[in-house]
Length: 325
Image 1: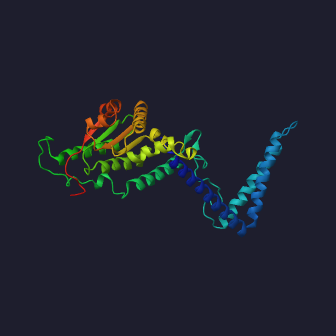
Image 2: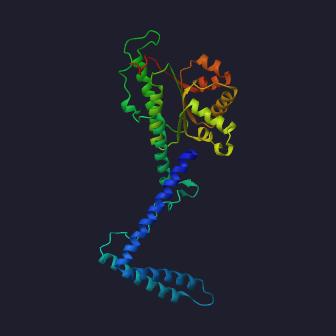
Image 3: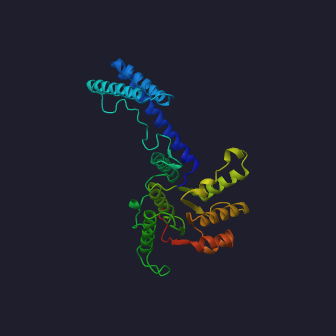
């Protein structure tokens, strides 16, 4: 799961803060215990010394270290017993002086070998959720709050059903997609007029997929192409380097309002490169647009239209503008 550099950076910063806080807490416990029982500080110092003596004896050449090692171990055990007795007599809570790391699996590094640890992955999930909330706004975009009653229930001969029945089917498609999202989930094309719930349902998918610890990038087409342009033509090239990487590497990319951006040869080239790369790497994409199939081909090119219309599952939206209703 490839989280964006911004999300990963913030998650790592939080992990470092948690590590520092744990170290401060451990230090405060140690100082309080030593203040109340100075003998504890002496014991801890002696224990460190016995460990050094044990290693030196084990490495000593030309003599059998077994007897010396046994004596050192005996002294070490006696010190530990005395230490435990003092802690128990002082009624310290269990583990009060155990300097446990912020994560027992990775020691607080965030990684086990080359694999991301669950502690860092959870922080990434939280930071991604914050990022999505800042982009999506109210935070009310959930499948539980989706309302079918705002769609007309009257039969529409053009649709062969009512807008409400059509949207009920769309709702079930989206909810199932989010619940079962994974490798090979495929891509969706949300098509229909303004104000029919395309953004709402794509936000519902984004939230649920992100909650399942997949990396999700949600952005409008305008902001997406703005990042591509800043990376390519921006005055501060070094600062803008890698701006587009998150769009290529995330598990799920959601492009909202495709067709509202200013179309140029650069945006067409960038869109083709993005869609083609994600398709070749079997990464899922959701596009919402007001454009019909022929408008997509006319606005962009046949290659882009082929990839969108030919490989994306069409989810057609119909009804009356919800915002007005």
